[in-house]
Image 1: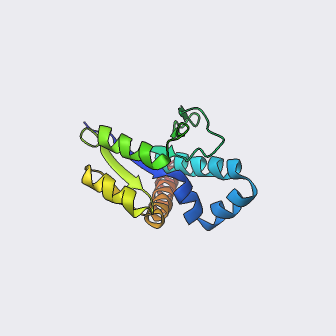
Image 2 (image 1 turned 90 degrees about the vertical axis):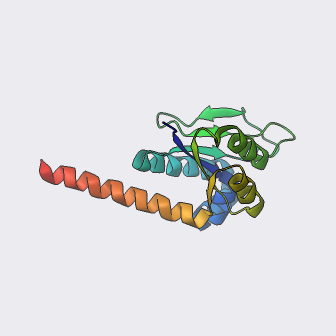
Length: 148
């Protein structure tokens, strides 16, 4: 059975989210960490595996890793590579075997992802999805508490 993945153009989402954009101006690392925590919550609430792809800039990190116990996968491009290129490569490689959704406001990435067989959404739609998933999870947990 194909797994469902959400590929996030991470800096694109940060700059489309006013709170994260403000935080990024003061502390880029804190903004990245906050976004990963947000994606961890979404992953827990929805069951969709989240993958955050950040642009590396001049402070390129290791190419890939996991965010912690929740296991949001995080990619940073190597020198001379972009987050866009990583997203396009992941979509080309996995769209035939997994259900992929790419979240970005970049129309070129959305067009390339859709052409390769992935679903796409803009950043605002993703934020709405995250809020809905968290609300649904909270309602389910409240029902379980009431049954005790």
